[in-house]
Image (cartoon, rainbow, N blue to C red; front, side, top):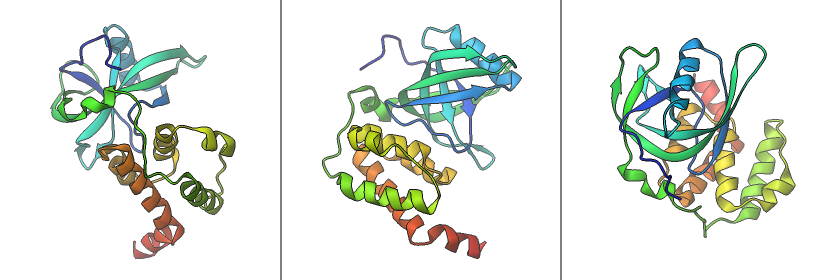
Length: 209
């Protein structure tokens, strides 16, 4: 659903390596650096309450990030803030602004991601039994665990987006998953990454370094 507020022309940016926010997903974050505590304080004063989550890339920032709306926050005893972001839309970063604020701001281009603000996508090509079988092997290989009953019940988009955000892929792989235009593209890439890892891709890369 389209939000009741206008998408901003300037967005406070929160660079975070290895973290991506998929369309219509939610992400919990701990904020403790003073500059990002200031970012949160300033964001909560706006109508849109949106933060641009984006990965660092080289000496700069990735081309595409996701604007998430702060939907919950609480303060811990040691002064950290625990927040929950709900994805509103991905954006393409067109310009970076460094001014008086202690954090970076950017100009987002929303034009390529109108479908992010529509209803959940379905993936007609998803074979859930194949994906979950791959996932089980991957989890065993990496000594991870998951709630298999929840995975069986989850909607297509919830399952694929959750795995894309939570599995321990590289920052570059997570960025590629984020930039996948549609759910079916993301699922194909996700399965490819899992299969690559199962066939020793991680070990091969380590030996080549």
